[in-house]
Image (tube, rainbow, N blue to C red):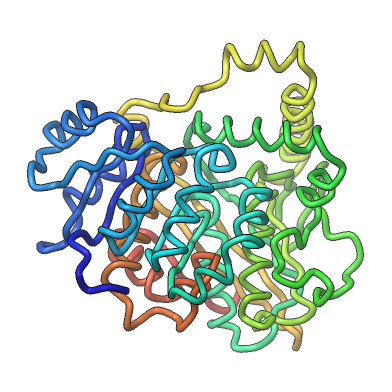
Length: 404
């Protein structure tokens, strides 16, 4: 990467809801000397954000998501672009192309399987050649999953087999941007059998699908079941569709370091007994209804009126009072049991996600000598690994693992 770059980090989409939260986080948490720019479509709005967060020294960069020349000029100025501009399939591909071509690291918040599959196919080799780390899913999806399994494997010191990520407690609202991305992916799945097949394939993000093990049907949980390891009834987790694919990509990019028989899924815990079973079944039914509602035009119109829109989000008190607590249980090849615990204070999709994206950008910009020697279209675990774990621990997030 050229030493002539005059910025370390550019927050692209800094006038949006999560983009501004990320800019605010960096304004108060970035070490002295980190050079930061705020980018988006409107110079006036960017200037207001800069003034309101009290950082007059932050640069302002105007670049539209469809203007390839402006995006390349922006990418050439900085070591890292952290982008919150989604849906990424619609607004993100030209930015990935720019960063990959000029060797600029990139971090985003995408939960879109089809977007990641596409940019991996198109830009992985280019980024690997230029040294760019194109890192997707650097928020609540999928850092807790991806880094949680990483530290779990390190604690176990041997191959992992049946591994289950369990949301034990969570308080927070759904992001309007996440919902917009989900709607976009639903529309793509409706438009093409190939898109439906890719989006539902458990190994959709594997760099070599033919090299993956045949473990039978490894789809996401749709109903409710009792989990002995957790001691609770569990139901589906809304982020499982992206998180599980990211974790499996991490395993494949590391030459199946977690094991050739590594089997991974994600669920939510709802307690034991009759009440736990009823809650799990009700949630599973609600999830199925939501997805059906997004597919069918009449119900989609109703949901569009009530669901959060991109740029909308909870107030400051709600963001501060949110939290998440996660356990990841595994059985190793020798039959031993281990568990990882991942937790943070702050609304998962907003406050905690802004911290995760901000620390990812700082990690890519400042920790080069501690990162895995790898470039291309990557995951948080394969691009930053334990360097990012340590940064998030220092920021107050819990990442710990040991025998169950």
